[in-house]
Image (cartoon, rainbow, N blue to C red):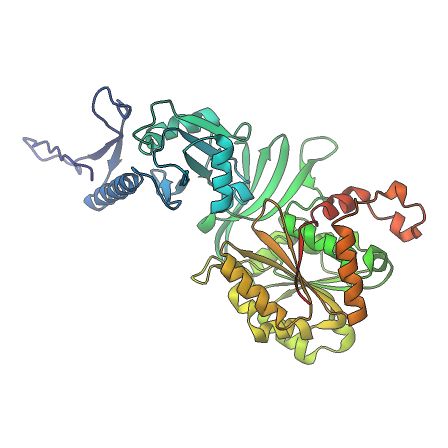
Length: 490
């Protein structure tokens, strides 16, 4: 633990104001050691309580770094805050489990918006990242959306002192920094507000010459709740939402699932279909369904009235009309009422479950655990038409919990198929209600899908006219997302 020295200056006379208090923080080591630094940061505080908080934080950080002085069997995490107490860096330490002595060390800075990628969001991914960087120890650094970062170099300078604290004793080389290109820090905050889920911000961020609009909650600022691509308008002075792009891989997988499990896109384009989206968020999935399937009727269910306003105002969800309706309700109550009181033509062809929740003790973040209980799953099934389809976004970093949830779903639905992204923690659980003959056709289609390349519109001249009208730009790319399939139950 660190030693704290209190320096008190006795004054000859009392000052008319409260005497200043300063806390001097520095990463100090013996002269000539790899930890030696002359950088000392002084922070002024106004009262003893704030001073004690700084001392406590310094103790916690030093205790954590001491625990990391040897080889680690897990991947511990610590969050570094700025002087205002806001989260600035999240550090995760990854060690090579196949060796006894750590001799090489590096730091990987995760670009903003890439936190949910497979390589950064779970232990297996970070271990793979460490191997790719060819380091015995790798410190993975996540940034926060509500913070400003000037550049990769400025971040490196800011982290140097911290990174030294985790350098293995046997490492004699300099610390090497990695990232995916430059840390693009251009950011424009469009709006900050508060909803039933807490404070949130609407921001626009430029990454790799593309602009993205994002909804984030400040209580979990490293997680993007909704995101869309922004395109420059004709004059180039403003930006508009790109209606042809879904940035969330699980949204693309859900759309691709429609091609193979509900009569294909031909039927979706030619017949009236009833879609229900549980969890509106920024409204991007509901907007896409409404705009791309012109005969469909879409209902979005959202508990938070502020999110409905955000979806319309900042993510271009169209105004309500005969084809698009937004219901302000608890999804549990909505499902129960639809299952009990809904007549056949009011039930749904497809239900999209895209409900997010904070990570609870049960280890399940999407959907909240109450939505995968037998009673609620039965309500989902009873809210579907006899040949309906359930598409559920499942997010958990615990394989046992994921298995339990999928087994629970398979106890209610006759067939369960899982689509997993190669570099994403999201799984799309696909539950069709078909007769036995149709189920066999689906199984055969599964086999074809994993073998045959995606056919382009040019090679499909014999297709029906409405099929040729399908925009190849998004169709082909979405089907590419839909390759890692597993029949869970049938």
